[in-house]
Amino acid sequence: METARALRLTQEERRSRMRRRLLEAAVACLQEKGYAATTVTEVQERAGVARGTLLHHFPAKAELMVAATEHLALERIERFRTEAADIPAGADRLAAVVDLAWADLAGPSFFTALELWVAARTDAELRATLLPVQERLFRALHDGLFEVLGSAGDDPRAHTLVELTIDALTGIAMSTMLTDRGGQVELLLSRWRRALEVLLGTRPSDGWL
Image (cartoon, rainbow, N blue to C red; front, side, top):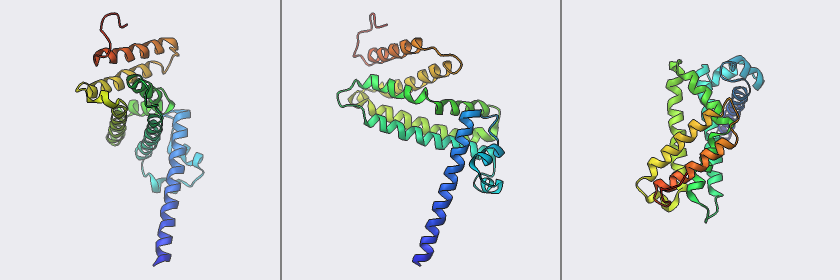
């Protein structure tokens, strides 16, 4: 009984390790070459496994790509939660919401996910599998940012403002994909921090820009 259980656990561990190996290879390929150049063959060779091994875990490219995106999403969520937990007790919570969201949306993981979004626009199979993953990711991001607000989250407008923050910063991040906007981006982020204060009534509306 114990021997069978130990063997089963070992098989599960091996499967988990192989799956992670394949996903890390897929993520690396996506980040370096983009979606169009990320083929099943490329991931297989990068992972150093037989084609049958990869297809056993991911029978279709869409499944592999979405699993890789989910792998990235889980890493983003974990990193976000760690950074959120490190915010000092007396820190400006509204500023922290903007800074945390931007740290996530301006990173390479976001741009990798963005390539998948674009591909999914004309790929029904990819879109169907990608949407639930993206919904979980953005829900986790929203909930985490809402928690960071602390007492400011009691305001009935807080949920909407968190959503607006994610949407606004997503747009800003997309605008930096091809060009380095440098100080212009920081100015926009600074204005949005102040805008949140105005919208929550902690800063007067006159002259806030």
